[in-house]
Length: 122
Image 1 (cartoon, rainbow, N blue to C red):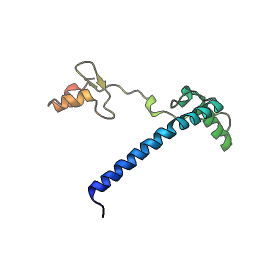
Image 2 (tube, one colour):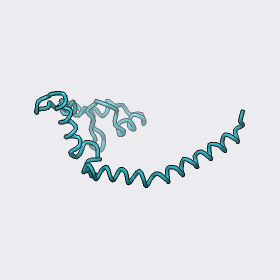
Image 3 (tube, rainbow, N blue to C red):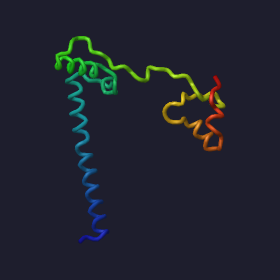
Image 4 (spheres, rainbow, N blue to C red):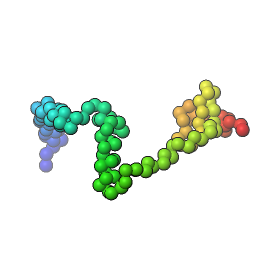
């Protein structure tokens, strides 16, 4: 069985090899990616999540493959519902009482104050 020093030496050698391989193949990989981007007309805009024509084109293609008509129903967003604030902080911050407690309120509660002290009276 190898001792710790030998294993650490092997790890160091392997990490050095990995770094050399990565450095050697990095430029080649970048060039391949750029060539594919150019061939497909992909720009930086399309690489950003949820932006560009790529997302729309893929969803239309998927709908066509399933035999769905030209109108694709969009899912109803749950975040579309606005909820009135239930708590207001000393600096005008507000919180609806849904989700995680905001940092400003968590800090005040940690200082010993009650969450109910900041409840908005209706």
